[in-house]
Length: 221
Image (cartoon, rainbow, N blue to C red; front, side):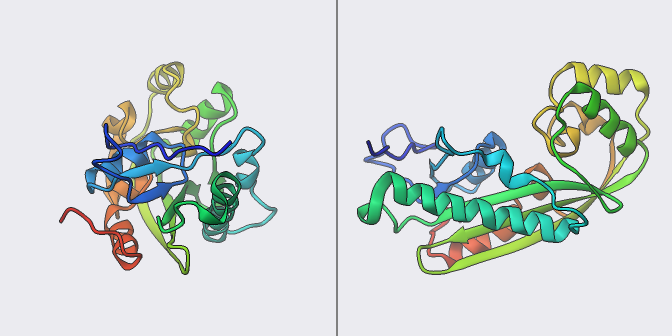
């Protein structure tokens, strides 16, 4: 059975139709697109898909190559998913948006921690040091793929063990690349940012808006 689009920013889809498909489970990306005034329909993984498998790091893979590869893999999966759900006669005119964010310390890619112990270890390694946050974005309008990569730098103040323990106990690090969310409680320990704050959250607004305009999406301003 075909699924209907699920607009994220509209109570009445007939009056406020979606402008894009968002192939992401991240509520943060949804909020950022809403900030741009972009109305989204969610194109989420189906029960027989394993989105985590797309994020496995290959041996000796550079971080920049990794985040771009994962984003393009997400786009390929999203387009296949759309075809399965709607076939050749579905609302293919809506551009599809995918993104991936990863935290990089030196040459080490810090993905989502598997458990509280790994989250604690990641935060210890980030404490008092500067790391990079890489976010790749891809937009496919049905004819052409457009993509970009944004790299930001984040310096974290030294984290007392009590702060790390409390933050891990809150559960917020789980499901977050690098075991933290910059829009969460740990923001109080972020000493300096160089680059795009929204990219660190999960979607660079300036670069994404450029991709959307080039793909025919009309923004609010």
